[in-house]
Length: 329
Image (cartoon, rainbow, N blue to C red; front, side, top):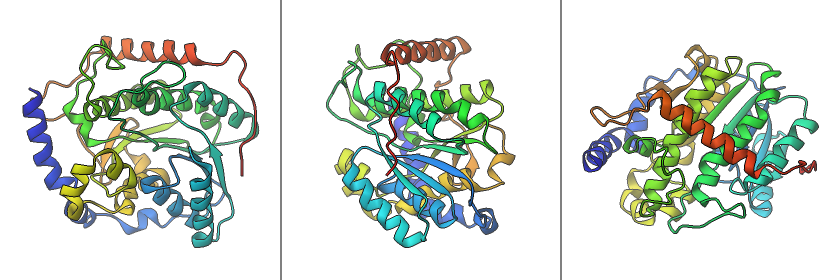
């Protein structure tokens, strides 16, 4: 079954996920969808100093939005911030230093942000990692899972009350079409039993993000949730984590701006919220979260068990008292 999924997925990817796939899809884009002002709206973007995250931050800044950049490395984040301000003329750009893999610190940051800021209109969960050798974070969690799944869960869950009291609240999570080859595995969330394969772990994490989004959409009707696939984009993260793929596909990869297009559309357009909450998007259209005949659907029992496991793990890493410190720069 895994061989079938991988073959079908790769054929689909060559047709849809490449630069030519974007060019074909973009012929039907409505230009007016992005002709909007974001003045007065507040956005949080994780992984905002490079690649898709930076392209998204740049586009929103040019539309006048207030942007909170969540980044691991302060020096790289500050350079990106300066570039964004220079290109956009928008000075409402703020850097917060946070490593999403350090799940206890995610709690601390989110609690502090809620106290320091009166509203948050859009949360964009973009940061992710593909660590090819098994590593553990300071809380004893596998690093890919901690960053891509539990960090996203904690940040989103903690910020939901702030989003709910804001105007037109949205949560967008940048997933991957690679999740199509994986079925949610509730028996081995952190790859403790199976042989470790960074690519497959990443794909499983991305399936987990889709399941989380669908669950949150049902539980929080005031917020518009969406998850998306940016296509195969030429970003520093792809070059580092998948050097052979990057080399082989370099001429066919999308630009970071093309990869970011649907993120931006979901974050700012009125057209995006005309669709139901909880859908998976690719090139501004909702698409299936499953390949044909791939047997990757999850039962209600599996989803409930998965979300319960996340809640238990999140509580286990939550500091007894969140340290409230401002990290705006």
